[in-house]
Length: 345
Length: 261
Image 1 (cartoon, rainbow over the protein chains, first blue to last red):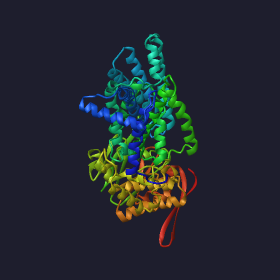
Image 2 (cartoon, each protein chain N blue to C red; image 1 turned 90 degrees about the vertical axis):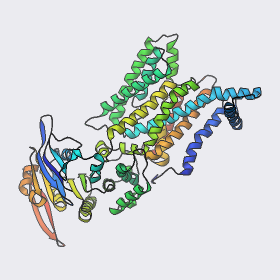
Image 3 (tube, rainbow over the protein chains, first blue to last red; image 1 turned 90 degrees about the horizontal axis):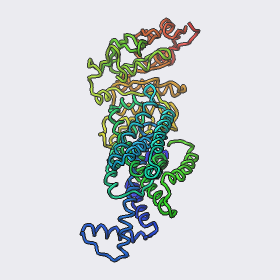
């Protein structure tokens, strides 16, 4: 990997096609299974039909239509958004904190967002309020971590990780407190299930409410991806490059926290993606964030699609996502670490 | 360009660190900043570049106070070369040098072909183009320091500020760094302010010297004048012998520490 790599046309094509292809395959997987050609036909027919506003097909196709459009598509879209979003925000946090171990999970942002979301759920709030509460507490967690870890204007990798652990533990305790006082018949099971992570609540409505936040965050981070390289230098160096460091940091923190909060409020706490995927991206084409961010977005989406399809179709009952990502993510990460010897190259 | 500090004072709380600092560096001049550990050499660099605020006094560029100059403009005149400490992310050397072009690249834009060409040229100018694909995490201290100098040169600065550029390097790498700074001053009229631990390097390299003392006072003048046995004793609390000799029509000075004062 001793080369200056860039994303050329063929690589860009692969990055775009890969998640789409996996999405098409995943749309066909499930108790009512469809071949990829059938999926494409149903999708095209459906789109044509919704354009013409008159859908009169045979009953077999009707069934396929319902399964694809009403059951699986919202979930697939949510998986794409969440996977791309969490991987992208992981890459952003890592650049920002000059820390290969910084992720929404390790910084406590995800726990903070969970707390905000659970708090809103306790009061039967609607999704927008849940999102806003998740964002507010996610940001608070991020700022606390940042301020604890900063000593004399510098924050070491170890301090960031330790501060993140502490903040994360604190918010998890607060979540436990909320669970403790929650109605054990009604609220508690739903909160517990939601915290373990699931895409099963995906509907077009939740997508329309939460999706735009994730997309805005991803677009901002994508546009600023080269700047992330500069932000990963030390503070004086960044200033000496004539950059408004405070403003740029704020934009990145806001974008990454926005993504995390939105993901958490739609599908609970899904770990590992923000750590695993950016590292794979670095191993593929080097550490330049110009390439790390786009690869993370694409691979994150692909990874989450596969995980969620597995979660919903591997067994009769659904497996919570966070359990899957951890069980598959942790050993995979250990193998990667052993192979590279922890060199973040 | 004339870079000057007038009456610079700085301290944390009640502890005064820098007291009435005065100096000016003109086009092509090199000034060394000397002083014992912890006396405030890095603090001085931070204050004069505006990373820290002087408690009293000001920094001027061509008679304009530094805080009145827009950051983008300021950092095209002076470029800061931090001490090369291990890099965290494995950016390639070329990617690292391109980062220097930051002020010339739109906020949401990527580096263009010309930025890459300028970065390559800067590396070529100081003879490190062969390093372009090497990862910063796999470089020696000397290589990384040269990469950071190349990065500073991509803005075509009129002055370089270097923080202990030759610390932790072996003889050969020290010489490479010193020669590079000297050549930039001679051939391109780029002035430099260099923090250093080595009085010999200051004598070899610089026209002027600023020696900081523990009590906050300082000596300032031409390097040969300031770096004498007397001042070394006062500032470093070390008795030294300064020797002068000639080799190949060049005069060299060596500073030999004799005993604690």
